[in-house]
Length: 259
Image (tube, rainbow, N blue to C red; front, top):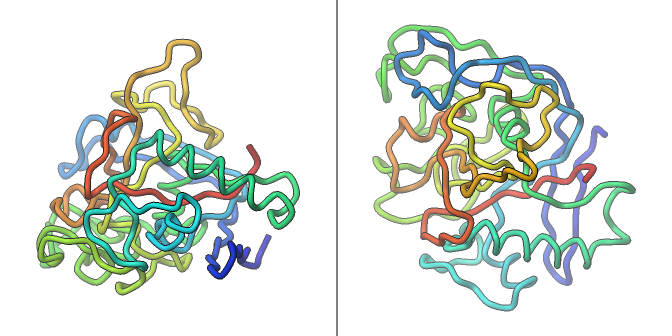
């Protein structure tokens, strides 16, 4: 799995980029003063190979599948927003139905797991170490590689200081080491996992953390958005959300992997 997978839906195409599996340290360390308790404890996770969308799902693709566009900020190449976790599941079911013959064998479209998302945001096996020291861009506490693509958020993402109060077309900022765009900022991205208040007893295999039958009532969001501060756009930051809520700063990115 070394080449991107290109999917075509009628006249539209989109790219799924390969993410080589590996092990990484997920979450924030106990001495990271920029981190919150729900980002801890840091722990070892090993993920399998998977594909991840080059961009968050855009409005033109959503419209092609769903035949309507719920977004507050219209634009074909802007991320779709005002979609709930439940809405995303319907979209993904329809997409899988349309791509039965074109998807790699044994793989389906789905939301990324929280571990997959963070691993990819950090650059996968290309992850560079976080160092401590002053970085005049956002916070002296964040360290190198705090965001998806580097330690200077203005270069890699749209957030409260540079978005001018709206989403932006995807791909305008620099990508991270894997060629993934907009993982920090623009819109929050939904993950497959149910929310847990910390990483105690989290899966170590990169799978979605879903307790059955004691399912929680909230889901995980990652990446920050156009209306949130730099602190919320860090690769380690996580937020919880009700699966029925729709807001103009919530979108999602597709994964392509075994079910």
